[in-house]
Length: 159
Image (cartoon, rainbow, N blue to C red; front, side, top):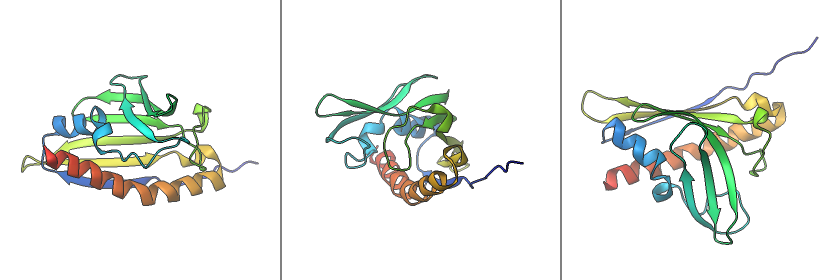
């Protein structure tokens, strides 16, 4: 008899004063403007963060030494509505090419009556990594996403 573990997803929200389309574009196409150069999974300084704008596209980081590290791959690309990407990083914050173990980040852009947009982020499927690694990753992103969303919201506000 085997048991299946379940690890609760991390859910975070932020409201931004922008249309859903603009919020989506800043989150994805302009990720390099708000994702901090100090938050990378490589050994050398970050040069640029990029999300390729199509299903199957890479979310990757380019480093000053010319190397790259893949953060994940785009699974859903619906401009102005939803962006889903695999999170191909292990609990030691290193790239992990075993896609079957990847968690997933789902970001939805919900227009509000006042013209702003609610950005709803859910990071899930930690159990794919196993109990210990999954809980470690969950704790890490639970503490990390609020700061990242704050940086994203500031960039949206910078216009």
